[in-house]
Length: 429
Ligand code: ASP
Image 1 (cartoon, rainbow, N blue to C red):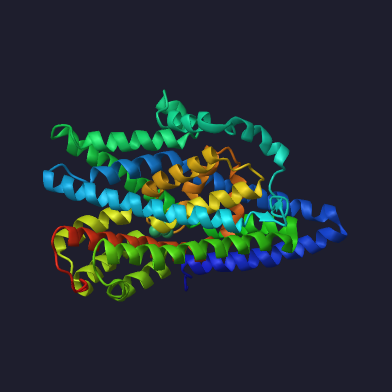
Image 2 (image 1 turned 180 degrees about the vertical axis):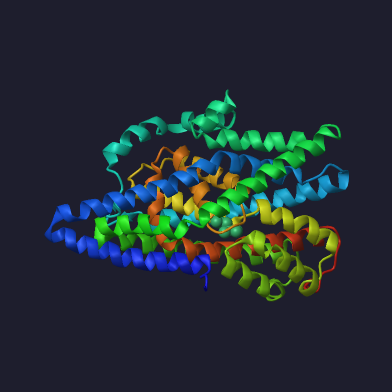
């Protein structure tokens, strides 16, 4: 029996969901009661799928951050390389997020004709969300201070139970860092333990991903059946906002960094990386693409094995510019659609969590949906908004994964140049 690849299954599920959803929508215009059994079945299955995603958030984020940070090692050399690499990764992800934030604020895909698009998208009413918003919306610096307070929760177990991810992530960063500083056999035991937890969580994630076509079908069909065509306008505007921001990061920010910081010819970097970029695009997995990225950077761009084997695996685990950008734009889009008043403090929260969770997102297809769930809980919005992202998620995943991989490669070139290597694409001075 021929088994279709997951992305084809998801695309077919979306196509079917749109067709079925529109059919039910038409049916319900003549006889409103007839749609009810379909809607409740879709929402039952959709909730099961979302619950499965939510269930893995805490252990997945924690184990991937702890094991990612612990791979940095402890010798001086590693620390210097690690410091530079982490600095680059954080800075490039921040640039990516700010590009996304800028464009999503200008284009405002979640606002249609001056009104929040939530109703078109069949999201819960503002009144229902209002109770949540009251919790998070305050004024001025007090709110920003609260974000810092959340970074250091007084009780880490309570923070996990309440879905307060920011505190959990900061705890994971601290834990991963200090875990590598304790004495030998305990250090190895802990590193292996967290690596084991992480790989197990990846296994569960991949298992849940197998049900994505069914989950996607239920969530998309539910949205389309209850809203008809009205749902498409904001989703398409959102799609183009993400594409524009990803393109700006890849074709403006990154080449500038390559040219002025790494002092190499950006065209050579694109050319050398083409096989890896295409693989990233078709697999939507930066971890899966890693061997090809390493091969391209060594053979085509001419970096040393030392740089490539340190910078790229780390990047595939913790550096996700495209993902960070996407998380920010997606969370802002959903917040706009709910009519949330996006104060500076809320935007600051979104940027911070997008940056931190992009470190913890696994390099596998659709992994950022989990991170978006984290951001939505942090800013007090219900997770059902994720349903509308699923319509365009696959194709945007392919694009953001290529951006993730390209950013890793730019970091490798930058580190190689800063360590005195001459690459095949070094600019003539
Ligand atoms: N698919 C992405 C990657 O592997 C992660 C994500 O944004 O979902 O890099």
